Length: 108
Length: 114
Image: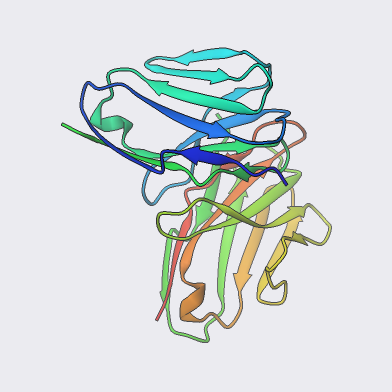
């Protein structure tokens, strides 16, 4: 089982600020997914990264996969209240192991 | 994208009641379905993995006689919480997958045992 450490656990910022969320492991990932979950709903897949050094962009979200495939980051530019939610990284493919998540609160 | 429907979305019942939660893949055949449990402000914890037509594989610490899982078809899996007690109150989420395709999650079921 791959242990995933996410940081920070909680982040409260003002609209327009930038932020970065980290996901780290001592193990090498075969692939990694980032999800966003709103209260009372299931997680929604944002991106899957599989190649070391890979960078993927999804509008204001930038996902980076470490060269050694042991860590990943999610950077949000000019955060908006609609970005509020629990951000989860998960490793694996057919069976997922989730990190503990980062709860992001963006205030107007 | 793929759609997974979970029903009911919320259940409130008395202690000792058995509760069944359904998970359906609406537009694809799910060879594997997963059941997760999530406590407030915590991440998802995998409870069990089920493959169509075979017995579910439970994670360590999850009682298989307490949480009965049936995966009778490629589009439906059910989780039955038997003789539920207040400590079983949680948010239960299912997901469905096929081959190497990413899992698609349902919207969860909030279970509250009084």
